[in-house]
Image (cartoon, rainbow, N blue to C red; front, side, top):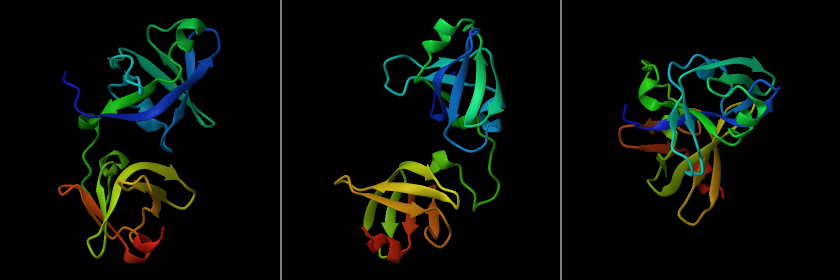
Length: 175
C-alpha cells in the first residue's frame, strides 16, 4: 500500500514492564483514535528508519497516554528500542467529516495564514493544547511565531482546498 500522508498520533516514551509493553504519550486528547485505528504505522520522526505497518497492536488508556502492546515486541529490551518512535495513521484512513465547520488538526498543518487584509503571516507548523481551545502555532519566513487560538472569532475562515486560513486583524497585528 503506498504511504500518502502519515499522521502521528503519539510517541513511544518508554518501555513499560518486562513483557514488551510501551508507554505512549498522545498528541491529542482522545486515546480511542489510536487504540481503535485499523492500521497503525511505526514512524521514525528523525527519518533514520523506514516506516513500518504494524501487524498487531493493542492499548489501554492511562493517565497521560496509553500502555500499548505491539506484536513482535515481547521483551523489555525490544520495547526499549521503540523509544522516540511515533505511532501514526494514514490520512486516507480517517473517517470523512461531513460538517464543513469541522477539521482534523492534521489538515490544518502547513496552511498559509493571512490577515483579513491579505498579508501573509506564515504557515501553521504545530499545535498547542490549552484548556480552552486548540492553539495554532504560525511561523513566518523569519522564524517569528504567532500563537492563535483556533476559535471562530480568531480564525473566521479556513479554506482547505486553497490551503489557507484567515486570522482576525487584531490578532494578526500582535507580535
